[in-house]
Amino acid sequence: MGKNNRHKKNIKSEKSKVKLKQTKAKLLPKGQNITDTTFKVKKIIIKEQLKEHEQSEILSRRKLNVKDLLVRLHHHNSSVRQEAIKELEEILKNNPSEIFNSNLNKILQGLGALILDKEKDIRRDTFKTISLILGSIKREQLAPFSDILISYLCCAMTHISPPIKEDSLHFLDIIVDKSGYLIAKNSQKILDLFLDFISKNKSQINRQLTTTFSSKLTSVKWRNKVFYRLSSIFTTIIDDIRLRYCSKNDLTDEKNINIDNNIYYLPIYNYNTNLCHINFDSNYKDMISKKYNYEIFEFIKYIYTLVPLIFESWIEVRPQETCDENISLISHETKDFLKAITSIIKLIIEFIDIVEPKIEENISKEFSSKFIHNLSKYLITSFPYSFKAIQVVDSKKNNSKRQNDFETVISHTHNKNCLEENLELCYIYMWMVCNSNGRNNKVNEECKVNCRKIIKFVDDSLNNWSTDTSTVSQLVKLVRIIFLNCSKFLYKSGINLERTLQATIAASLKDTTQVNMKLFKIFGDILLDQFNELHKNDSFKKFIMSLPDLLLKESIHDDIIKMINHVVLKYREYLRDGLEKNQTSILDNAKTIKIIGSHNESDSRLMICNLFYFIDGQFYY
Image (cartoon, rainbow, N blue to C red):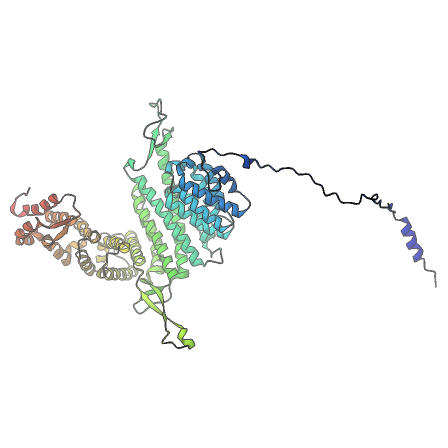
């Protein structure tokens, strides 16, 4: 065997490596191996602790001024931030005017940043403080800083964190409640973000409905929250439009100063300090009107995008269950959702009614023709709706210890407590039918079925008339549109309003309260409409002939007296027999009758007496 040279190779490689120089450790001399424990001390001085506050300066309970608290709002510790918010809120409660004059911009900037804070408690405390601020300052004070609030609102609504996104709705509620004009002014920025809450862009025109972004909320609950806020925004927009169209300029504190060749100077101050807008452009009014019309048409485009999403959302929650009376049973969540979407569509109708005469566009017909089929298909087919309440009944009997004694029996009670939502739905459908088909044209078979269903529901509501203020205004509005706008095509289509008229007369004559007078005034409008089909109705003629009997009661509303005077001028032959028969009794009762709602009782009594001028030719003074 050959000799193995591996050992020699290993030795050679070890010798070729670089050797590190080894040093011997030096030991301390004897007696010096002791640890030195001495140390130097230097004072830590914080300049803020040495600062002295003036006696007139406003301080918190921890002796911090507003500037110190604003710095602490950006502290890395969440407890410090939260404590600073609470102390700032206490200062603002006690001294609002002194602080807002010089620190409003910094306060809004500091609190606005905390709306996006990751801690929920900090966000909620911030909302309380902002609500306090908006409720304590005037509109002109907030005007220069309004963009701060709107910018942070948009940031919160588009935030990547679902809890912050959800809390942005609470922030919106505060602004709508305290400073709704800010939402109306910046509606174009905010409305599109609401569409992103419930849908995504499928194309440039269409949008696709999406589910909720948070696992803690169902899609129905989340959309309820979104649509409820949308209805509040629509309310502020309509209020702003109504205010702009109002002819009285003294309703606002703003004043416009137009600069032209005849203006050589402007007063720098005045005793009446109002917010003034200086317009250097001679075509300022034309520019404002063009901009305003542009905003209106943009809002109309938004409506046409929103309404299909409303119907798609309803398809997911619409009821599948009906009871014996052909009433659709809905859950509590579905009831809230129905209320939200009917409120939105009703506000859209109100917007169209206000804007259409001004822009000279037939928006109502286009809107009605486009969406009436979907309204009938998805909402009216299951009409009317009833809330399915779950009543828990304890079946525990005696003192038995059996397991069955602790069980509960769940029973469903069919509560007809969706009256408000049903009335709004009826009004929406009758408005659409009237505008899509015209007031004089017959309707198709589908509309006939739906109209008969609605008329029957109105009759039942009038027969069970109550003075509940939450529903009475809606019922009056519905009866008004049926009698004044829809009566012609209903009669032409073979739908008789005899029962509805009788129920309306009976409900209006129950008492003379202000609530029932709203219903009674409808008859005055019917009398002024010469071509109304109800004039030929026997029940309406009997009602007109019975009006003098109201003058013999113990009390009467002033509006009824005025209405009787209008009737005497137009339908004298209907009232002549009743007035001649009871002339003496009416004149005697006019001295003692209690007149409700009159500004001058003596003039109202003379009005009753002068009804007989058309009979005996005598004036009473």
